[in-house]
Length: 422
Image 1 (cartoon, rainbow, N blue to C red):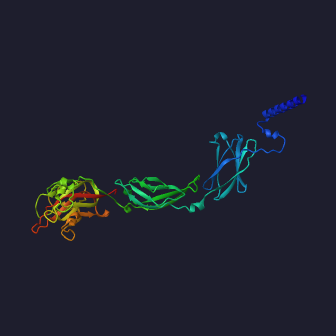
Image 2 (cartoon, rainbow, N blue to C red; image 1 turned 60 degrees about the vertical axis):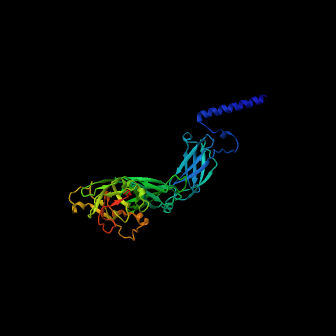
Image 3 (cartoon, rainbow, N blue to C red; image 1 turned 180 degrees about the vertical axis):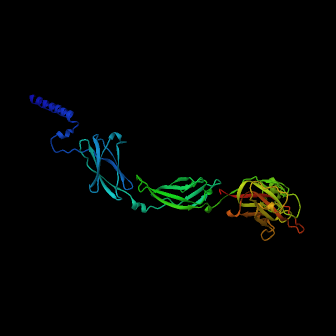
């Protein structure tokens, strides 16, 4: 019993001594005072991964439950290169360590990762293979190409159509100058098939800078860019066409023919065939005065348009007041056309004939429903017509009776189409 008490006294004395020494020297590792060859290891790194970069990469790992971890060491290039750093555990999020290793040439590397505790003990190594990217990778990047441009609305917005996406690309930055000559950037995700440049149809010819950017790996920390420049020319756009909203209106200027049934000219009712007068209520637009001189009326479509098409549907066909020779004219002057007293060269100087309909050929206009339904129909090339708000129908001759040489005319319906977004 006395021997046991003596042993207890020795143990308590040893503990007291250790506490005393610790208070003098700071924190120590108790295992240093245990006899034998046991080696202490710090808790190793867990969940190790790397994130590739441009001549660099990032090593990430999670600390285990060992509370004494205070640093780490990473070796590579057969342990000829290394980095040793402290870890402030209180600053970590979810015990996750992120360390970027700079100045690595483009290559594949094998890394050994050790954690170090505050007693200087190291963990067993954890290995990971990582890769960096550089100039060699940049030379094989391919630009995402533009397949074309498409005008999409009256405001002149233009859709930029891209070719198929590139697997490693994240997207494209498109750089252009807006109408105020300010540089704008638009981002198009790699999954998107197009981007939209507002009002681009009203912009001038200019270079478009296409900056395709790449992540060489999904978790990469750096982005690579491939830059290409193409020329954008709004004249290459395929024009967008839309019907000009009805109703239109008319203005009666000096020299214009008096007429009746204006509202019938844009009420949307069209005869389905020759002499199908029931379709329009047995009524039509017509000028009132017989005469051999040309007769004309002036139409206001409500706003300046770039005319794409005009169609006038017949009421009478191959008889009476069917137009036989009719000019379609556009007003190129400013404001409202003047109402001049004298019909001379000045009267017509701002009026441009954009088409003349001639229905005298029975081959072109046979005396049947097919000929009737053909109407007076003309489509215009984009650059062949002016922008105009006011149009004239000037009939030079009408009718097909042998003794009829008058210019009075009638129509069932009038419709305009326009190029939009110009």
